[in-house]
Amino acid sequence: MGMLDRFRRDRGPRMRGPAKDGYRTGSTRVRAADSTDVEHLTTWVGARRGVEGFVEPRTAVSDVTLLLVAHDGEWTRRRVPSVKWAHDFCNRAQVPSYDAAVVGVPQRMRDWNRRQREAQKQQARDLDS
Image (tube, rainbow, N blue to C red; front, top):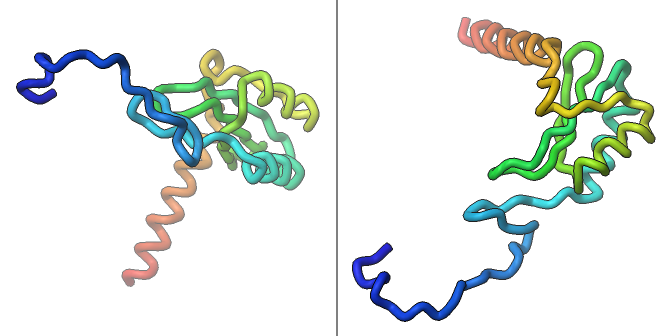
């Protein structure tokens, strides 16, 4: 805030229009879910077994997301239009869905991430030698 800003006449709130690629939340732009996200989720579920869905609520920096985790811990996350849409998507795909804010994310996902990091480190060491 500038030194003289508090002395200026208040002309009412200045509203900006919606962002071109989504909409605004405070000072952050959030990209809305689109058909590419839906197609990715559908393809991903069809290519893996033992998939579970974890619906992540909207935050200050991201919209509602659907986290899909396969039996081995491999995962993907995409924006979705709403919490209801995410649960309905999982029901149609015959995938159990959970509220991630309540149950958290599964340990197998964290284990998969750890294995991926270790594999990348090993690959970097192999390239250096």
